[in-house]
Image (tube, rainbow over all chains, first blue to last red; front, side, top):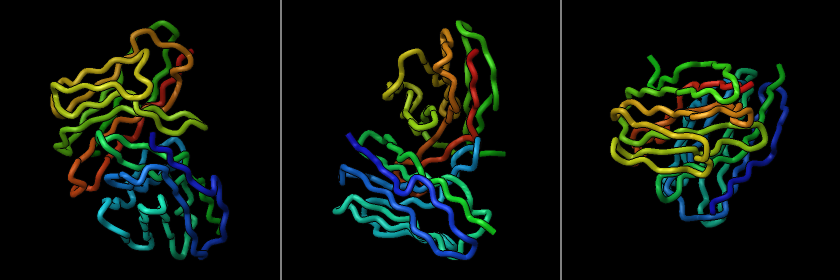
Length: 111
Length: 114
């Protein structure tokens, strides 16, 4: 059974700082890895999707990497802004088209 | 309009009542899912459907049922609601090729069972 762990559970940084969120998974036989953002009480917004054959994806100030052999993914946020404050979720798609989620990292960016 | 629309957004119901949560999508995806989110437990899969004739149980299907009325519509029912079904419920669709961005989630339905 796939297990997904996100570290740290919470992170508080000053505005402008670059930061890295970590996601680890136990089963390297994945189809895709997807990073989501969730604002309090709201839905999930897709940030980046990395297919199993890819090593990284970039969108604006966000860069996600995938290392299947070590069971790790990172989400790098450059020049953080208060509007980046949210919970970031890592989700792994394995066989049968099912997503397994980590519990998320709650990010606070202080002005 | 949102790609995945859930109704209602919020609902309070009494123990023992039957309730239906509805989901519709304009993504054109065949695959649809229902998840629930609880603090400390993350998101867990309730049911999923790969097409109109294909319905599958997820990891926590007890107490729930679903109906796939059309490619674009997937509803979740609680036959007899109980307080521990209080949660945030999400509908999602997916594109198995990954070319359309993977999974798309609705805005959620906050359900409270009293």
